[in-house]
Image (cartoon, rainbow, N blue to C red):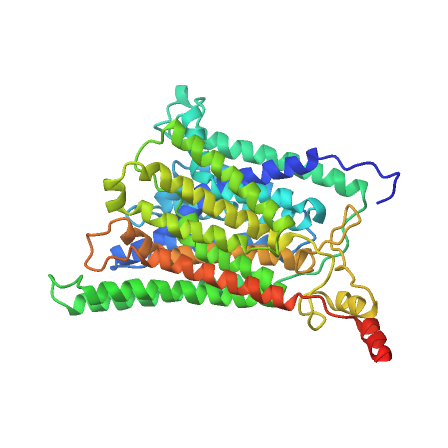
Length: 530
């Protein structure tokens, strides 16, 4: 850095952090529960598959849409998504519930409004991910930490908003004229997020204008096509699984319709679907960004059963419990981000967080919560610590710049021009910047440009949402353990633990591959000395 260069102000990065946290809070609180609709494929086996299952797939596809055009500024896209959701939410009373619940007979208008609200949530999160990829590499971890905090702590954030602004009994569109001015905490949450995102968009535009415009970025359909294909495969798998369960139950007598064999098949088939989804997305992520990108997708899949369905509370939350979860969650996210930034090669921090999450899962079993009243406090705190550490570290590991491009043929991870430029020089070359407002390379730890980095970030959250949909029937059964002949309580901790093991293996593989190797000049000097 030149001596005459003024130090960078921290407040623009703080604005990005808060805006990303607000988007993560809104999308996780409103969008992640859509995965639970897949549980109705077991409960309601007659008739067509519920609309909510398709809505969860639509959310994932909408998240991937902004990655198609990495040249678009991310924050305005996120603001447009929040505006669409807000308009849809204010248009119809409880649109998402009436339009998507299988027990509700929604009209065509209600279904269309519900799907528009879901698409808006997806665009909001996709825009935030694109803004994260476009942020200056030196301060990108701020935005990543904020987004992780919002995604992890959304149950506590929603609880705080509900406490400050009690929910009305009527929706604004159906309330009496004299009560429509009443403040609703859920509406305030979205309005606040929209305002913060607009401020972040203005700040990002001013920063970009002061350092030159964005370099051209190509149309990147690969990630979106992959997400659509895997989502369609999951829907097909859920439909086939539902049909098989229905045939098995109808083939047995009325009393034996829920015998252990049928329920065991339902449980195993759900896990198989989740594993297939995770493997496909991980393979494509590895093609984009090698081991760090694959770790991000594995993290999303491993944490899906807990992160998507939130922290189950036994009743109204006490102030002490909410404060503890919020405090330890924020500290865990910050600690994970700092650990990944400054000690990434020391330990697999994301795997450690996933292990803590898996160890905390038994605290939510009905029998444990009945015997130990403290489980309602200890469980959420452990979950917040585990998920905070995992996502705080994981998002930094996949976005933190290192200044060197990945090895491999040109065009596989970087653009051909980037690969040629890296191979032509003697010293390691940074990835060609797609957006470089501060004069720094716009690649992540894997060295890819904005388009590939945004795609990798999308793949991680797509794995989270799709695996959560696949495992929704198992999650539902784990909360009613003892009522089924086959108790699946150990299935979710085992699934998460296997994900942690894969993260450790990818960590070791990355360390082995990334060892410094002598360059051409060093090899030539060594041969001359010999």
